[in-house]
Image (cartoon, rainbow, N blue to C red; front, side):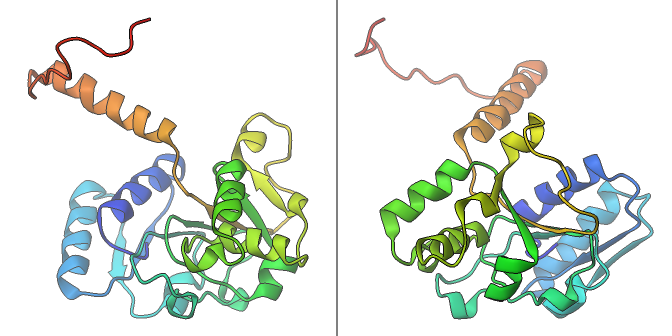
Length: 220
C-alpha cells in the first residue's frame, strides 16, 4: 500500500476480500505518524496476517509484491509522480492506482496490460484536457490516452473492466502478464457506498434526517 490514508485502508480491505491468503502487507507513506496509525489499524483489523511493515522506497514496496495499491497524494507534475520501473515488478502482479503514478513509456506500450474501471471516463478526460491530460489527471490510463493521441498506442491496447466482468475479453491475456489497473472513480461506486451507510444508519438507529425541499421543482 502506497499512501496509508483512508483510501489506502479501503484499498487494503478490497484486496484482502479477494485475496485472503495474503501473508504480508508492506506500506509506504511520507510521515511516521500516518505510517504508525496505518500499521496499528491493520494489525487490529487483520490479526491473522503475520507481517505488516513499513518500507522506505517505491522499489522496496513493489519488488516481490503480488498486489500493489497506489493511493498517494501529490502535485500534478508528471516529474514528481512516483516512478515504478518495469524490472521491479513481479510477473503476474497487478498494480492498482487511484492516484499519481508513472512508468517508462516502453513498459506501458509494449509490456504492460492497461485496464480501466470505465474507458469512456478516460476518453472524456482526454477530449476535455488534450493534449496533455496526464499533467492534470495523474492516473496511468490518462497517460495511455495521451500516448494514443500521439499515435504511440492504439485504442485496443486499453481494456475495460466491464468487458472483463461480462466475459467479453479474457481475465488473463497471457501468462505472467502485469496489469496496470486505473481507477478514476464512478458515481455508481458512490451510490453503493451511500447505500451501505444508509442501511447501517437505519439498522443502528443513528443519523439525522434532512429535508431537501418543501416542494420539489421537478415533478414526474
